[in-house]
Every structure is written in C-alpha cells, then in structure tokens.
Length: 243
Image 1 (tube, rainbow, N blue to C red):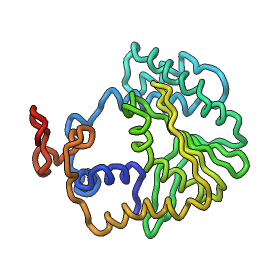
Image 2 (cartoon, rainbow, N blue to C red):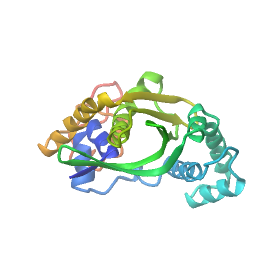
Image 3 (cartoon, one colour):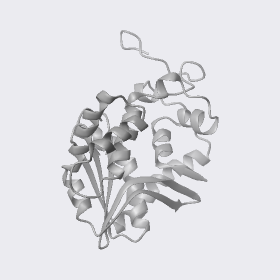
C-alpha cells in the first residue's frame, strides 16, 4: 500500500519493468549497478545537504563527500563546479531567503488507499507558499520540452506533498546542477484534486494488475531492466532501425 514517486515514474515508463524490479524483485543487470553517474549524484547530494549558508563549500567537505561515494580525487573539481552552479542559481537564493527550510525531508501522502512516500531534497517555506527543489546530475534531457515532460510526474508528487500540508501554492524546481538548466512548475491549492487524479490513475492500474511491457525499446528503461533480453518481448532495434 506504499509507493514512491520513483516507483510511479518507473511504472509510467514501463509497467513490466516495475513488476520485475519492485514485485518479482529480480536482480538488476550489471548495467544498472554501481555506475559512476549514480555515485556522483550521491556525492553532490551529500554536499548540498550541508550547504545551509551562503558561500562556497569547503575543500574538506567536497573531498569527504567524493571519497564517501567512491569517487576519485579527479572528480572533486567536477563536484565543486556542479555544487557551485546550484549555489549560484535563483532557486538557491530563494531557499536561503526562506523563513523555514527542511533538507532531505520525508513525505507520506495518502491517496485513495495508497501512501505516496519518499524524500524531498529541499522544502522551503515563506508564509503559506512552498518552494521544493530537486538536484539533478548528468546532462538531463536533450531539450527543454523533453525535460519538462521527464520531470512532470515527480513535480506532481512533490506538489501534492506540499499542498497536503496546507500550502496555498507550491513551486517545484528541478535544477540540473551540471548544466545550470532549471525546470519549474507552479501549482495552487485548487489543483490538488487534479494532481491526486493523475497519481490515482497510475496506482489504480497497479492494483488492477496491469503490468504489460512497454510497446517499444527505450534505452534507459530497457537496458536497466532485469527482464530485458529474456522474459520481455521487447527487443533492441536492428541496425536498420526496425525492431
């Protein structure tokens, strides 16, 4: 009866992959384990979680975060650049100016018999207005339109969490800290039924047992799926472009 927004996103991308990983709990393929990109994201979150005042993070903090995530010494400069990109953003300035800030804040929102649970990078309050920020590493989607579509479901979940606490408005910002791109969504309290409907549409399908494979190959989803290449009927495109 509990689902995370990551789980919802995976289900929306491919119900069969969600079933294989979250329900059947098949072991992940090597391509999905221990990537440098994931380690870098862990290090960046550890640093930004501790950046509650203006100014650059210390070299000691950067080195400790990099080492703790299993990164090498050569990754420290990349980590510093990414962290400073976020700290120089308007989103970071708005967080510092907020009246109340919570970092790595847990959420639990009941929606139609299911609890939407997870953790939010930053929630910042000013009166009854909420700013939620999420750090993204890597290069992200190829263009702004694709980025907005990629983050839409996560923004929906975050906004629900804010509005459920009584916020009059929720601004949800995703900051790609290596490119500097910011993708924002704005919601108000009257939007809550619509947002709940979007989430319920997915959880209702889950409870109905709808776990069909996606129709076509998608690299990020398929190559990290334990069922791909064996149980799943979807195959890689041929050299000519046809399945």
